[in-house]
Image (cartoon, rainbow, N blue to C red; front, top):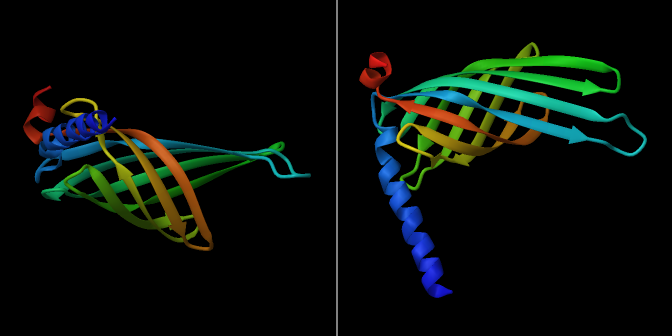
Length: 162
């Protein structure tokens, strides 16, 4: 069992070392996440919340990206539905192990919102990562959600050549 754990740890180390070039200064990132929340409380209607969070960013330094995010949430409760939008900047810092932390702020529902989160960039190949993220939101209340999505990490020259 110890050999298996050691081998698995070594594989994760190699994946992490291989992916470091994706977070270099001058590269672009674009992609997004999606979230789904289904809630049914006793004596209440079923509530379904679908969220899409596209984003684009630029690495201003190694492992440090800034960019813009536009979130779209559709919530249905019983027969009614509501659309909520969020737009604003974000900043993200990647640790050498591909874990990252992010902060974002912006305008949503006619007010100011602030959020922060943590996730992991699981590199599928040289340009694509699958990213699960846990986010927390502050504003007129407190909220938390789990999201998952894909990011493309593109070199400026390779992006324009294709």
